[in-house]
Each structure stands twice: as structure tokens, then as C-alpha cells.
Image 1 (cartoon, helix red, strand yellow):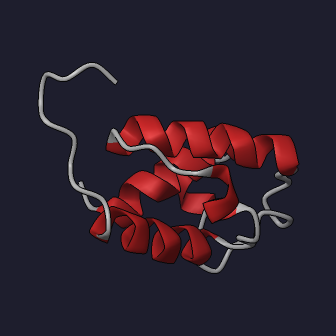
Image 2 (cartoon, rainbow, N blue to C red; image 1 turned 90 degrees about the vertical axis):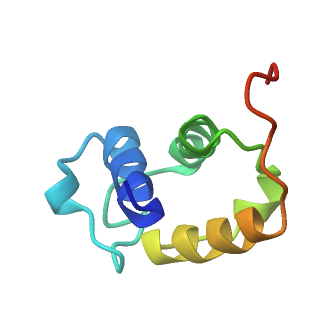
Image 3 (cartoon, helix red, strand yellow; image 1 turned 180 degrees about the vertical axis):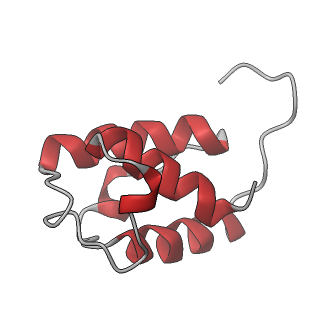
Length: 87
């Protein structure tokens, strides 16, 4: 599954929406997500991609596309965790 699809699924889960309702240009406000939902989304993304994301890296994101862009940059700069290592 592509990174973008995983992110849309995570956003849909946290926002309690169908994936078909979540588009790249959807803002968190349009999806009814508040600051607590954003923190929950951070945890969902960390689990989905098996990475650690600093909270400040996502504080000013407003749309699903922002998440895709930030996460792509974050993952490009982070070495993958060795398989089988505890997280």
C-alpha cells in the first residue's frame, strides 16, 4: 500500500470518516478534527509506518496533503528501524 493511502486511512480512522470522504486537499477543520485528534493521528501514523515522529514536526499541519509532504520528508531523513527490534 502506498504511503498516501496509508495516511488517508489513518486520517479517516481518527476523523471517524470513510476513506472516500478524505481527500488530499481536505483540511482537518473540514474533517471535524481538533488538536486531540491530531495527536491521535500522530500515534496512528507512527504505528502504521513503524517510525517516531516528533510532535513539533506536525504542529502546523492543516491538510492531509501537509501530512503526506511532512511524513515523506521525515521518512526520507530517517533510517528504517531494523526488523525485529523492539519499538
